[in-house]
Image (cartoon, rainbow, N blue to C red):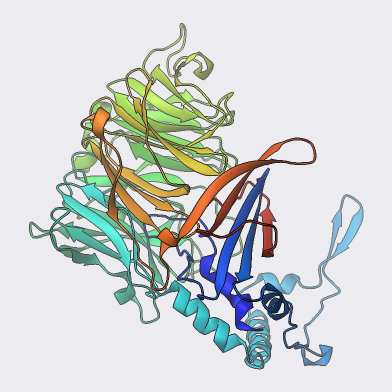
Length: 574
């Protein structure tokens, strides 16, 4: 393929998926000077179309001929494929219908036959890909595009700031610590040093309230099974490994009690296979446990389980004031959950290793899978939750969790009677963060771009709408005891700009650029992005982004490479 066809990758948008450990992103690093660039993104329902147009300043038709040149073709004759055993004896009778399953033997990943099958398939793939002369050029190009510094949003734990950073091509992002935003940063934990090939990932971190301990989970080779470890953080801000090690952990929370003694986590019963991650059986009977720092896993307290419903999954979150544990019960992938709580004043001995009967103190606040509820903030017994109950775009509601209905001992007032604090809007409420005092930060997705607002936590009233560039909020960090928060914006030509906001004075709290991600060969100021709306066949107004070099004439004579995707509520924002 001529170089022109690869140039569109230089300006493609990021797929927004950032966690605490900074998921990969693929932004641009510039465009050849002979080209102007013109990007269109169209949202139709859950489908996003993006078009990138390359216009030669000299001869557009020449670029067109380059783009449409046919690549070298490679084919594989059927006899080159490895022979695969078919077992005709495996037949299932489903409601009177016979269904043959001749490859059932491949469901055992540890059998010698399956291992040999995988090896043979890989051998053929390597041979065919090795014949593709263009492969190294694309590999080099992608490596060049991806090799830029990637910063995560700062977040505060205890009295220190932390952030994740990847220098460019590191397999895993590194966790840094600094005493203040202006002080020098030091490495707290580098997952790249935990394996020779970089396949051990730091999948989750959680700090104690005083910031003196950090629990974290490690995943090997992409497995969902993790091992939880703990480090102590010295007065100098350095990490010291402790002996704590928790196993049989999967899809787990990490929620510290505010006495800094330990944390809640999830685990499954001990598994039969020693090579976790290769099993094919469904995992059942997840339970909620409490681990006290400095003790063995054998001493952990089993807090809650639902053996009558082995497929249910359990997670815990400790309220900002440390008094309550919110328990979320989920089943499947639908955005619904049951919501329970425990008043930790009733189980004070758990942090001291006392075997308390935790389950008897569980209050079933919402005991159905009708909607989803997540914790936002609380003042004593008055709680604010984000919910999609009768509000598919989500809203905020308030309730006193100890206000029981007549004749009810354990369940609070029916959720439909809870007071709306911030009603549902035409935009989707995606992110919430409660800050010091009467401040609540809300991020909405409206017309495939994010809108950021400051609200009153007491009344729900909107106090301010922050001015943002067209783009997406990849992450947002802030905590209840601080007036500051950080957020990271990505866009069509920006790889991730981090802003800081201090809401101590709501009338003067505009976002300030804290850190700009620079990419060699790309000057974002040379581009402009606008949003327009076009009518579809049925009259629906479709949001559309146009991103191009400043001064480009939009005269319908630009070459367009169109990309579209849609399904399972996945979309590609700027």
